[in-house]
Image (cartoon, rainbow, N blue to C red; front, side):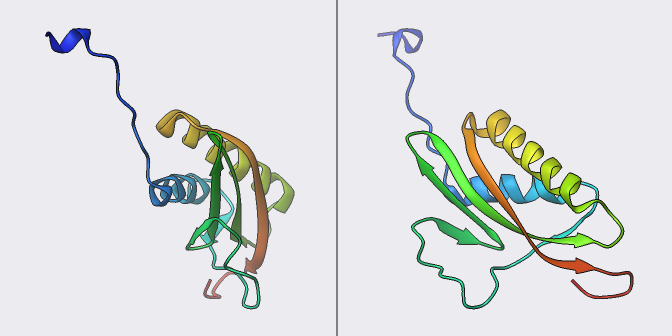
Length: 117
């Protein structure tokens, strides 16, 4: 049997890879200083995987999740957050072929010039 006649297989993308894609997309948005960590006291047992300020859940081929950001001072926070949502969704669609149903952005801090994130 020829290799060309076989049906295509399934590609599985690790949740860690999805989180890396989303974080890299967020860091590419002007105004984002860092992808932060969850604030202390928040539950980490919410059903999704959590790494470096990003929690994503995949259900029925759709991604939902949360990103925790540190935003640079002097930028329009709302515009930066919307751009992070757009860029992360685009990157996940293009690189993993998955659709983002919801991505909630949480601004954990504002980074002022000379201050550490």
